[in-house]
Every structure is written in C-alpha cells, then in structure tokens.
Length: 294
Image (cartoon, rainbow, N blue to C red; front, top):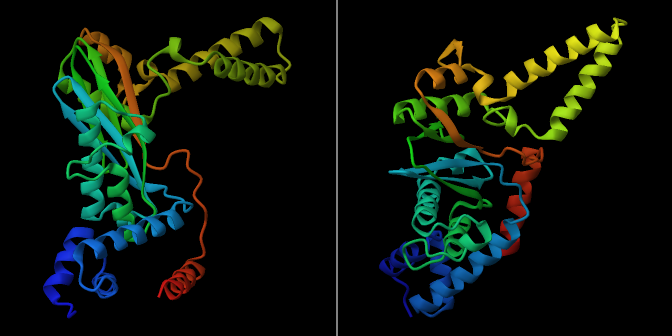
C-alpha cells in the first residue's frame, strides 16, 4: 500500500512521533493508522523505560490558583531546553489542572488520572518522552486551601511559593509568598523548628563557646544569643522582609493584623543529585543508541 504524506501527517498529529518514525510505522503496518499508532505507543513506552533511569533535575514549577484554593506542582526534565518547550509546558500545566480538579496529590495515584484528552497522565508523559527525547517525571504536587487571603508567587519557572493568611489581604499574602520564594525559611515561627535541629545547633554553639575559655555564666549567655540569632534566620516571622529589610516579616504581619497559617515552597530539582555528564560521551552514546534502534 502506498504511504501518503497526509497519512504521515495524521499519524504525527495523533502520536507526536517524528516524521520518519511515522512513515516507518505505517509501512510496517501496511497503511493501517490504528496499528501504526499502537506500534508507536509501544515503541514510545520502551524508549521511556530506557530513559527512566536518567536524572531529571531540571523542569518547571507550576502554580494554579482559583479562589481560596491553590495548586503547586513540580514536573522535571533533564535539561532547561526541554523545560522551555511548549509541549513540556502544556503537559505541566495540564498536570496542575488535573490536581486542582481531582484533589489527587499522590504522584503514583496521579499517573492514572485522565489528563483531559482520554489519555492518562502516565501515557501523556510517555508520549512526551518519545517526542522530546528526555526523561520526564511528575515529581510532586500539593494543594493549599485557605479561609483567609491566599497568595502565590513564582520566580521564573524554577521557584514557586504559596502562602495562606489569617487576616490581611491578597496583596500582603503575595508579598509574603515572594519573600518565601526568595529567602526560603524553614518554618513559620519557633514552634515549627524540629527539636533535633534546635538541639544540634545548641550543641554546636556550646562547643564553640567552650573553646573561648570564658566563665560558664558567660558561655550560657553566648549560647542563648546565638540560638536566638539562628531562630531569626530560619523562621519566616524572624527574617527581615525581602522588600524592606528594616522590618521583619513578623512586624509586617502584626502591623496588618495578620498571621501566616501555612506556606509551601517548591524549587526545581532541590534534593536531586544531578550527575555530571561528559557532553562528548553523551552525544556518542545517543548516536550509538540511535544506530541500535535503526
């Protein structure tokens, strides 16, 4: 059967595969579009499985806000180049829309959710891997709901933060979200500092102070002062406000009759160990893999 350009075009639109891959699949399926599409999907899954072990530490943070509910998701790619691709951006935004509509934030459960066009998120991810040639992963998702003002802020596409307030207004909530994105506090106030973290820092400060050779009562004051400084540095309310360092976030909130109920911050790739690759070796490996697939 003769394979026409219109058949190749239709198969490309259905699968997102390359032109030569589509033509080859149509030839092998004797012009049967459905069979060719199924073969490409299987091929795409195989390619996705091969790429699954590759580190995806780049990507985007997407925030979707509607009324008193906001969604934040992180979707990873291997490179910044793919993170800027319109197909990748569309996929990430669709994942955020699914989280908002379904309320599902568990990544494993999210994979089976319909992305909106009849495909599951996992199938859409696999198709995207085939199209862009990189490992793609939905890393995490969260939902913040508030009875009071809700603010969000994204810095580029790499850092996003959501803040829920009691009192104040949305402009203040957005300003606090900007601060969270920029400064990355550990928790809202001292009550949120893990006991083991506080104990570890106190122990370190005590050892440092003991080396000074000063009397015990002076050492105790030194340690107390250093712990207080440490708490100001890591707690949201103790930090100088990013837009006005002369005022702490705590004083800013108090002046507005507001308090932070909760905040969340995502940064692309945080905590992911990215392997250093030799570019020339990587190119040669891709060429060899392409030859094996021919």
